[in-house]
Amino acid sequence: MFTLWLSAVSMAISLVVAVFGAMARTSGPRWLRSVVAAYVEVIRNTPFLVQLFLIYFGLPQLGMRLDANEGALLAMVLNGTAYTIEIVRAGIEAIGPGQLDAGKALGLHRFGVFRLIVLPQALRIVAPPLGSQFILLMLNSSIVSVIAADDLTAAAQDVAGRTFRSFEAFISVTLVYLVLSLLFTAVFAGLERLAFGRRVASR
Amino acid sequence: MRSLGTGDYLFLLLAMRWTIVLSVGAFVFGGLIGAAVALARISSVRALRWLAIGYIRLLQGTPLLLQLFLVFFGGDLLGFGLGPYLSAILGLSLNAGAFLGEIWRGALQAVPVGQTEAARALGLGYRARMVRVVGPQALRIAIPPTVGFLVNLVKSTSLAAIIGFVELTRAGQMLNNATFRPFTIFGIVAVLYFLLCWPLTIVSRRLERRMSVAHKR
Image (cartoon, rainbow over all chains, first blue to last red; front, side):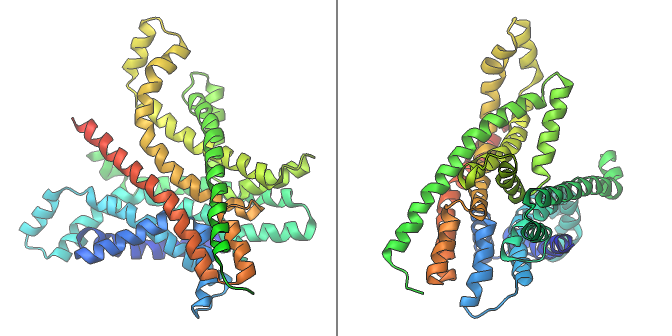
């Protein structure tokens, strides 16, 4: 199940990088803000497949060799990070300025305000979109089969190639994806209720 | 191996035409499917609602790449090979139909219920209610997210390359096989996609901002 590993690992790395990225995007120095904004725009306005080709076929031209799975992971992380930055940024910007003023009034440093006040609230806001982002990432990961990484879709292509029963191979794997995405939708809904349910209800 | 010439750049530019044709085609047919899905999704007939929900779950819960494979190989299995061109349009339209259906359902439901009730009180039938009362109001709400979705649609046409549709990405692959300059070629391909998508992103963002200002008033 390289598909699940790939999706989970790239989501985890993306999330960590995206928290810093979103922090830089909202409250960093001006040049850093524009760098992050440009990165997000470029990634979000070009197809994942082309990004994958650039990384897997293009980087060796610049002298950086990657095997298919490393290339797939790098592309997934670079792509996922851009989308996750936007999600986290929206969460951060949803926190009212009163919260920041209150934090400052309590004598917290800028980073303290971010870590103790903004981040916990923002994460609660962004939990649902992050859940759907994970599912999108998982479905998107099927594209890495094109560079022959060992994911679920590549396995189906392998079976199709050996047995000449392409339709059967692909429909079985499609069903696996469907079950996975329905399963994760249910799991995320349950987790949200468990983690945040009561507090949201009491508001 | 040979070097890159002006003809090669022209080849990529011309291939971009097919990306645009594919996007427009999928948007038109996907739009028709999407309208039907959106109406079915909010219909008063339970079976229709379930059918629409099932369709959306199925198409949004599986990878587009596999949907394209299934259309491509499924046609062969049933005895009518669609070929890469028709398969790509059909697959992308079916997929776009699910996403547009969800977006438009949201827009239709965002129109206050009072509007439907008032139209009904005036004696308007279903068609007149949808076409003259709810539809135009929903359209305004639907435009910004629809333009945003177009960006996704343009990007997803790149997957048609995998089943052999010669659009921008496939043209890049072919050129790369001949010249072996992957970084340059896919860099140019990425820039061309960016030039297609970025204006759409900006328009969508501007429309969204205008809508939210209009709402606050």
